[in-house]
Image (tube, rainbow, N blue to C red; front, side, top):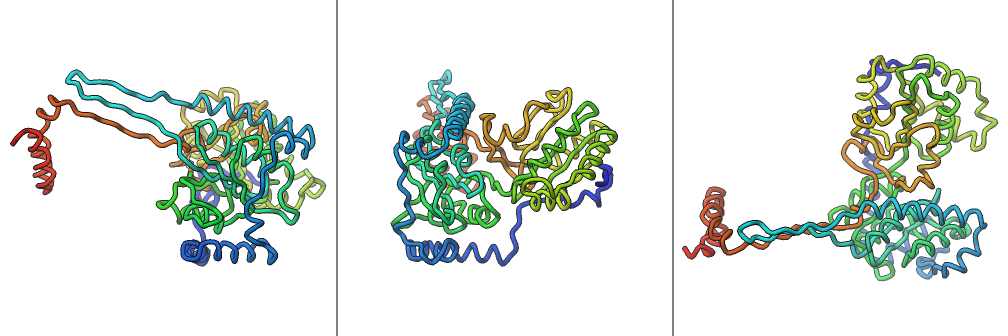
Length: 425
């Protein structure tokens, strides 16, 4: 594997020139599904579900009963149950600390202000088939902490239905409704509502390209989180990093079937050479999921050499990774200059798998470089903020003439008159 200089912009174009896009035919297909669900409701939902999930699908299969927690726990291996319970507890603690108090104050003239936060009434958590139990926790736990009263899970079923761990995760998080449907039709139904699947205020969670495109298209009629598509990982390492740990992060990321970008970025050429040598001498065919891993490493992985800290940080922020592994000695100093990343894992003792499950941080992160302007899923995604003002009589009297002047200047005479009425003029 070759090491690419950070100054070689042509070689790095495929790594840096990213963004969310779907072929025009896919955009049109998703739009047609959304329009069909909007027009025909359950009939369209059933038709598209049969198309993607099998001819035998019936509307009676759509909503899946969620067993009681005690019963659900008996369905899964004890070690899986314990791990999911630990994951839930850490997610709950991390998200509870994100709560912000309401703000209320009164100005000297008696005008009263408030900034109040209210939970969304209903949220759908999209959980793709791969890693569905954890995906459910990542969406449902913060929704519960925020006080959302109706939590829905949308997840495409497997050939044998849902694994027991999915049912346990739903029971553990207090999910209200579980629907066996995925893809664009699931997003359309949850956003627009059908008789069998009432609409929600917001849809969160990571899916494939068509699911994410559907979320983009329904925005405006339904809230959505960041357009979180395929995962991407950047490892930043210095001369003191363990090259085997670096390669371990690449291999773990590579076994995700939808991973798009993998890179190691370092000022240390010896470290990059050691990583390249390990990859070149490793027989990828002997690994579990070897076909996936080999393809991801050969097609998507880059080793990048920066000539300075400034060049490294500039490239890091342009890369805008969903997941950033900082295997450097002074990581918190780096962090001061990192502005575009989803979730950051610091040090040798915080591997990517920790953030995927037990760290307590949320793995639903902006991808395809959208970390440049989007954030990882957090408690704020499950609340709405209301700004409140109550003018005092003194304030209104003082402001009336200025408001009228501004409104007249903007060509809004009725606005101006509404202000003058408060002044008695």
